[in-house]
Length: 161
Image: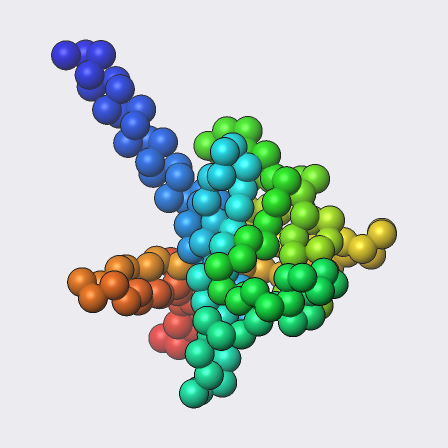
C-alpha cells in the first residue's frame, strides 16, 4: 500500500510540474503554439495564426521560406522549435536549439528560458545579435464540437482598487 501511495504521489507531482513547465499552449505575438515532448526534444507546432477577419488562418502559406519547395505549405501545423533537448521535468533553460520565424522565412539559433512568472522567454540569435520575446502560457479547453477556447493561464492583475 505504501509503494502505491508513493508511486501515485510521484505521478501527481510530475503532472503538476509539467503543468507549470514548458509543455502546453503558448500565446506568441502572432500565433498560438503547442509545445510538446517529441522524442525527448522540444517541438512547437503552430496551432493558429492571427489574421484579419474573413481570412482563414489555415490557408496562409509559408511564402517567405528560403526553401522554395516549402513556400506552398500552410503555416498552421509547422514546427517552429528544434534541437532543444529535454533533460528533466524541472528544466527551466533550454539552449542550443533553433527557432523558425515564418514572418522572415528564416531559422535562427535560439535559447528558451521559463521565467519565475510562468512566461517563456524565447531568444533568437543571428551571429552575435540576439532579440527575445515573451510567450504567455494558455489554458485551452476543447469543446464537444472540437472547437477550442483559450485563456491566459496567469491573467494580468487589475491595478485598480
